[in-house]
Length: 208
Image (cartoon, rainbow, N blue to C red; front, side):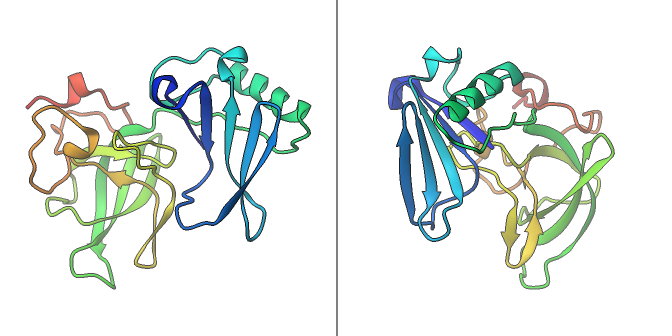
């Protein structure tokens, strides 16, 4: 569940995105300040738009935002007041963390993709399909987890690459819009002292 807010460009609207919906025909149901965007074919909820959201909760910043548990409680009360039975959930954060490739093997249906097992801290390992030419076992890099919004506006959700499950993305410097990012292909290579699972901090992890 990804929350996005940009008052200057979009207006006082909190957008809540549940899944990648680019290829899906959709319809909108509006009640009060709440609009539910749903799939035309099967009726499943794809996203919510909450209008005049600043009258309900306080939000700062542009782009991806992280409403608190109290904020989510207030928003869910508004959904219930308008007769919606579904509810919103807090997005776990951080969504960009230090990861380390623990295992890597070739994709069975690609000559350039690899299937990587990536440690992300807390004893967790996730599978990521990646085509970075510099990916290697032991490499520490920055991982965008499901629920992340990239600086470009693209969204990270669990998915498949050529039929293989992938649960995040290992990031190149330019994908994170880092200053002086090289234009060549390849994921960020962190110093070996970087702590797996630590939240990404450009001031700490990027010096170029």
